Amino acid sequence: MRDKVLIRDLAKYVGQEVNLEGWLYNKRSSGKIKFLILRDGTGLLQCVVFKGNVTEEEFEAADKMGQESSFRIWGSVKEEPRAPGGYELDVKGLEVINFTHDYPITPKEHGIEFLIDHRHLWVRSKKQNAILRIRHRIVKAIRDFFDSRGFTLFDTPIITPTSVEGTSTLFETDYFDLGKAYLTQSGQLYAEAGALALGKVYTFGPTFRAEKSKTRRHLTEFWMVEPEMAFYDLNDDMDLAEEFIEYIVQTVLKERAEELKILERDVSKLENVKRPFPRISYDEAVEILKKHGSDFVYGDDFGGADETIISDQFDRPVMVHRYPAKVKAFYMKRDPENPDLALAVDMLAPEGYGEIIGGSQREDDYNTLVKRLEEHNLPREPFEWYLDLRRYGSVPHSGFGLGLERTVAWICGLEHVRETIPFPRMIYRNTP
Ligand code: 4AD
Ligand code: MG
Image (cartoon, rainbow, N blue to C red; front, side, top):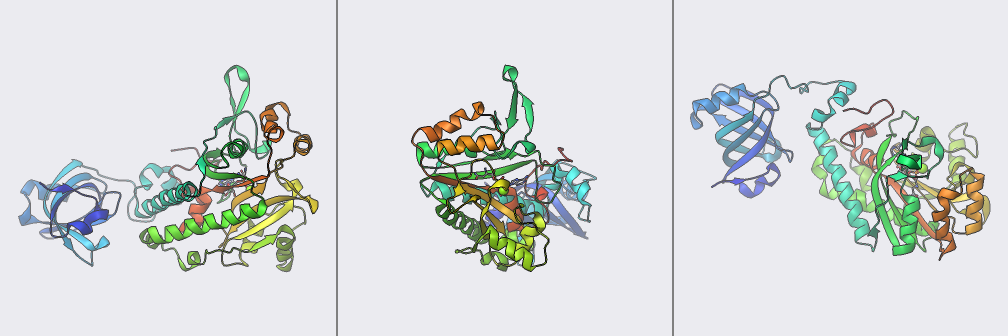
């Protein structure tokens, strides 16, 4: 009996006979030999079919299989430094499951629109495999980080009665007899209830923005992880954010080196991502922009180009804190030293990847929060439960949100966030 094995585990099977299953990535022939490149989702393996070692039918099947045909194959594992992955299969037999011809994505270059139209197939390619494996490892690092530091997972709803991050980017839906409901922009307000119940919590799930922005950093559906901590001020929040990002990046460097190589990522840029990260105020960031000839107007929020100028000054992520309150959300606490400023922080990734984290200390005073709702023209009634968090046992608390796709794009060194999620949703695309 031969074991059914994965390409990733072949090192353990050198000299043994094994079974494998997968798809034809590529093939070449030379006379009586066929080289089938098998892909099984964990790697690539060169399978060498000698005419004399298999039946005539099997040899013919190997000949007829087109790219992405699915098949079972068996034989003995050999070390072969010149083969992709370093191993080779000396084939004893094979069985085709599905003969495929005219697979639309060939090894030649295709345009991005064609590839995105075929996203359901494009995810099979080597680079896309590498990106999705890195995404998975980042998700695991995120969970490990919080789980090992006393945080409790606190799942928050997707269907909500109110906005969190402003009303202009809400997806709306009819909700039975209750009128309108909205797809959540952030689980934060609910996470705050969690923090007052459990101390330290995180929520991690899909969030939605009906963004009009058609940029390489925006999706309409993206994943966000949001920790929320009771008794944390803005400094504690920044300490946690930098420890978190260092952990994610260093873990991926260690655990997904091969995938980063497939993506030709310059890992020296990631190796720098070690604490402490620089921390500058909004005012200092504006100074940097002025020094670089920008016509930025004090009081505005930074655009993508501004963020790039600021982050280009540093070799690791930079945290910009204390923004003008009027460009930030209603729930942020004001700086006691200057009430025009919010106790907010954005973390900007290096190499022009822009804001990956947005966070703040929250307003914890009941009367002030009521005033903020009014200033932001938000209705009182749907926020009554949120105000309860200030009526009953209010404490200083803080949190932040990390955008998963922007983080994957940065770590993988990708041009656009559309390749960081299996099926991207953007203003001009909701298929496949
Ligand atoms: O800065 P944002 O809007 O912050 C919040 O939603 C807070 N409630 C988080 C909190 O304090 N708990 O979003 C947080 C992060 C951004 O820094 C960015 O990485 C990502 O979410 N993000 C997007 N990613 C992809 N596409 C979009 N349209 C995004 N909008 C935000
Ligand atoms: Mg933000």
